[in-house]
Amino acid sequence: MKPQVLPHNPNFSSGPCAKRPGYDINRLNLATLGRSHRSSVGKAALSEAIQQTKLILGIPDDYRVGIVPASDTGAMEMVMWSMLGQRAIDVFYWESFGAGWLNDIVKQLKLSDVNAYSAEYGQLPDLSQANPENDVLFTWNGTTSGVKVPNGDWISESRTGLTICDATSAVFAMEMPWEKLDVTTFSWQKVLGGEGAHGVVVLSPKAIKRLESYQPPWPLPKIFRMTQSGKVIEGLFSGATINTPSMLCVADYLDALSWVSDIGGVSAAIEKSHANLAVLTNYVASRPWIHFLAKEETQRSNTSVCFTLDASEAQIKAMVALLDKEMAGYDIGAYKDAPSGLRIWAGATVESRDLEALLPWLDWAYQQVTQ
Image (cartoon, rainbow, N blue to C red; front, side, top):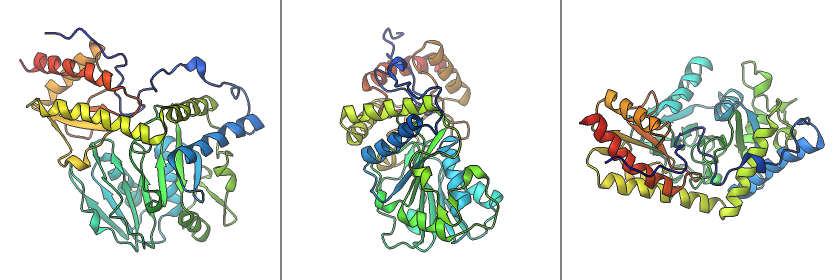
């Protein structure tokens, strides 16, 4: 029978993601709107966003955090164009975004000393192949495959190269071993459900040393420059952004950070995300027609949870459209480059009760399209 109860919030998109529970745009601190981001008020808001990010995530004091343009994509491009080329690089990828970073490294930066280690959707490559003398680039959580790195044990503590991690759908939902990560990028539009267009870059002292000791042989656009006269631009890590940020987006981010603190910090956000994954895991265990795309349980993402179905691509598209029409679940189709299926966001801003309300609708929609 057709379910009668709809999710209170049917937003299960993997980016931009659901706003935090209880979100009310009228509760944002809008004192910065209409003010210059260079004003004392603007700089204070940006500085607070940086300091709260470090505090809540437990980022080491000697790491630098900066807000940069163009979401996680902009942060990763800034890092690659500014830092790569000094050493050989090992690239590990198992889904579309990781493959995109490799493409930029080889075809845009035209680096030749590159080792590419790949795996099919649903699996991880052999991470033990990482050479501690090389730079290593990888995504912590494959947003389009639902496969995550289970831990950082494979990263050498005695490495001489940099570890560069795209962690955009992992930060605030998964434990991040900061001591193993020299460069980390993310965007607050993912796990915190913030507004888009801004990225965050986290740099270790080793990464800062690379910036100050290495000059890439190609020209750098202003929007990518983190150094001046051979020294890191300290203002970037205290709120003096490269270009004009949206102060409304910053206010929205500060609201999300405050919410994380209110629920008990990043550990509570991680716990919420794992509880959401448990709801989906129990569901899959009792349904023969739906399967995790991730083959290994320890590698299953607890944010962008991806599934294959015993159905044709056309049937799955019809199912996604039906759920959208019924207002039961929005934007849950698999990513365009991934195997046909469903992708349901289970990050901390999603309530378990909304996932539980969605599940009967999945049963109903599947029956409607496969009868």
